[in-house]
Length: 216
Image (cartoon, rainbow, N blue to C red; front, side, top):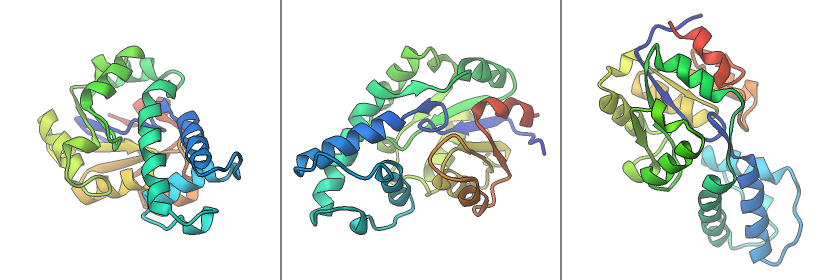
């Protein structure tokens, strides 16, 4: 299946950049703050997977103060992403191809400023491809709410029905569908094919580099 769209709204972590090292380091520092020098490696991705779905993580932690842990963990993760994230292989050439076909917007639910995200993208020489950047600080309702998706479409000057939302997570698909956009799920993040397919996106593809072949 190929999608005819004029705008593409793209996620950042797990889509354009690999932020897995930031997940690991944030968890290490948060556990260390509670006096633990080690943890089950499965928690590195299980914790963010659950958080994104609004699920409890109480059973995953060896201590009771979950709110304090979450505050420290998330603040550390957001602070580390700019430093530790790496661009996905081949992403520069892919964005160059896409820019010739559609208008591109970047939507991230990192709790950081647009300037910080832009600085990271500039470091990777990717900022030039995006007409707008929207972060969690720019919206009162983060994904899976459709609000940030609709905001991106408006900034692009494109009807939401002519947009595709591209991301690696369940919330990307849910937000895109709720907004009325087409949805494309990527297998380059922390969710499995089965988990993503249950959300019924229009397409499930391996990674961002496969995207140009599916956009008319």
